[in-house]
Image (cartoon, rainbow, N blue to C red):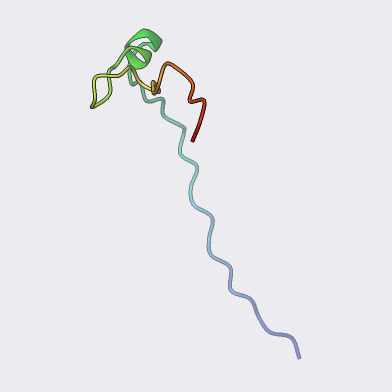
Length: 49
């Protein structure tokens, strides 16, 4: 006995869109909520836990 499989129809092609968030300088120089540069944490490494 063979079960029939219902397939969904393919979605039509839509061309990709480019989203611009700003220049590299603008994106990397933004300051976080604590005033640190993005991705910035402690400047000195922790030597003990």
